Length: 190
Image (cartoon, rainbow, N blue to C red; front, side):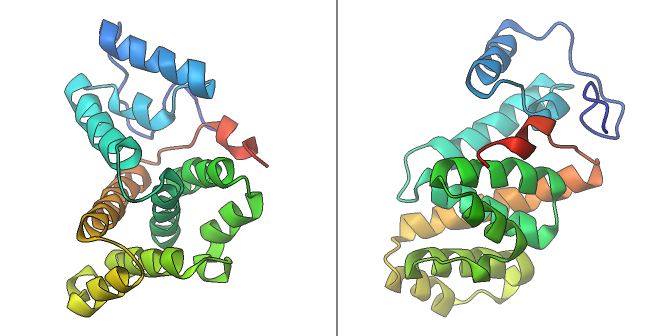
């Protein structure tokens, strides 16, 4: 069991007291989720870093996009599965379960998205995210064209690439710092 006051293996305590805007953000998390995600606590040793992280995350995962929130969470899970990021698999696997209403889909994506009953659009999107994770330097126009053929616009392709890129980065940070998911995620939407 992890020490919930320290979300990572690093000794980087949260700023105390938190600035009022940050405290308000954390209070909203508690109101909506029932807890403050450890990834936020982990970044709260430096409020500028926390603000940069949350601004990027909120833009990629919550802002208007041709990708649904579920599709963006599916990308997060597939990238995290390839990278074997425990934190993101637990946290974003819970989000897939919640958004899809399908606990089995969440588990399939965590283990091997190729066994999930996906439509052509979703499969093509996740194949691209997987290729970006394992061989981004090998992506060619044909890969982008496959996305277009599946109905994605160039803006959607930009969003797919950015969500996959963000989770490749955050997976590596979470793994390198032994970031632990909040225990509450494990039981959500099962």
